[in-house]
Image (tube, rainbow, N blue to C red; front, side, top):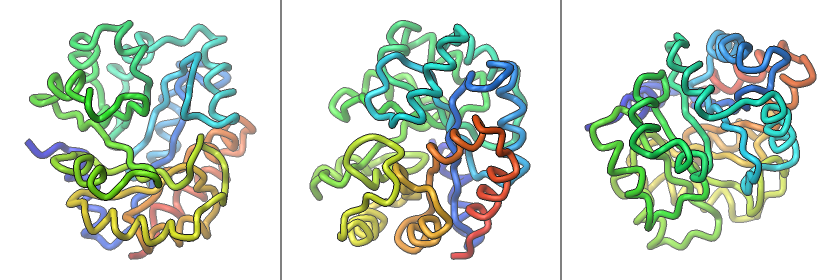
Length: 260
């Protein structure tokens, strides 16, 4: 089955617009999880193509310092994956959500139960950065009849044959990691990055989105030329934490209205 997230993003591409996916940390709000709906509504009204919702975890190996601190603030409020799923089951939004979590919290939750509960939410995509492709069946098997896409990540060091394996049969979008290392290292890009992204887009028959380090309007314009859009985390998380909601709205609106 073609997943809703795939169809939704392909519709945006057909409209000759860039895809913009902001990342937020669930529970990193003065009201804790009670503020999640408010933040999602803000991003939805600003025109976000989809919204990536991070799950706080004590060992976030892919997160840079800003997002790691956001996770720590959320954990200090006692936020758990179970609480987040319950909150999402009672949340209404027309914008597809994408969960970003590590594998351990899913194991603790119970894989089958997690997928079953997730399917009762507006979540249409799932990113698990520490899940190797060779073990993706741990999750993928349970998603076959669910409208949730398991999103593959492709790094700069991923060889061509490996890229082909990762994009083969993938749904939702391809997460193209723009830097080697953790999130938030702005503008630390290789000279051959644009060529890498262009080749990856040629390989994939679903959208390719560029993430890690994307933080400026110039980045958005650049990566929309060689991929289908961007994912922005650190800037969004920092601005929300510093109560710069208007800056967030303006940035999301800009990214969602880039003409292709």
